[in-house]
Length: 63
Image 1 (cartoon, rainbow, N blue to C red):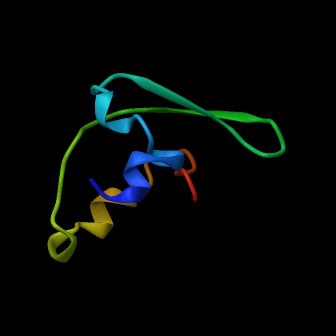
Image 2 (cartoon, helix red, strand yellow):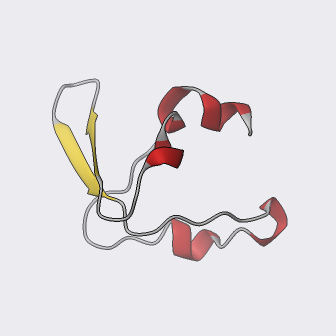
Image 3 (tube, rainbow, N blue to C red):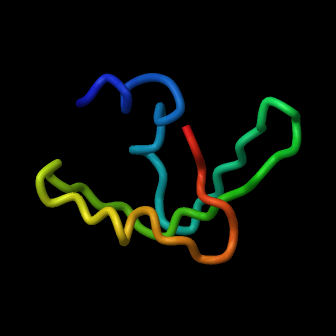
């Protein structure tokens, strides 16, 4: 598993299921909640940027 998935912001994402909620606390303290819509794995050379980073209303998480 890549290092950035084992630790840091992505730690624990592999145990989530569609419908689960993830709440992030920003440095300035407001929180933002995301709902897991799907779990998928892609090879780096076929990663679907336009699908993964598409917006659906709210702001996407930033690292």
